[in-house]
Length: 182
Image 1 (cartoon, rainbow, N blue to C red):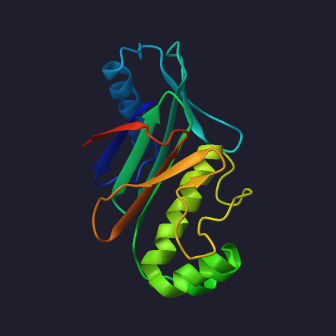
Image 2 (cartoon, rainbow, N blue to C red):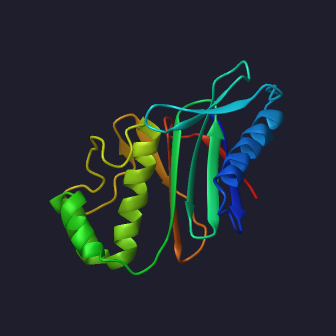
């Protein structure tokens, strides 16, 4: 399966502007894959997951933003993405509340960057399934303390952006083709 990942850096305070960014990314994807986007609309599920309607084909998208960085993944199958700028937070306290014991051990070993690596994986997977961060989730670290890249029917892949920005996307295929568009 082919996906496009679209990145924008800048001011995006307006919800209308963020919605426009999603539509622009989806239209760019559609045009590069010979999909008619003239009647395209952005709609959301009951839980708020966005998807594209009105193209004559299934087009899925997912979006994340942190500070002034925005990212969107678009493709013809379910997908999820999360991006976080690494910044000080009470990550030990948060990890005790939301993560398994193996995941907490991973965070103790790798500190704040380990916390954010796990956080974006949980978010990307929850967006992929449509259940969000709080839905039922498998463990993302094995008993030996290694990150797990394949959970249930999702495949998680890290996307290097910058030293202080951690990003992971989740798709249904291990060998999906990803095109990065700025």
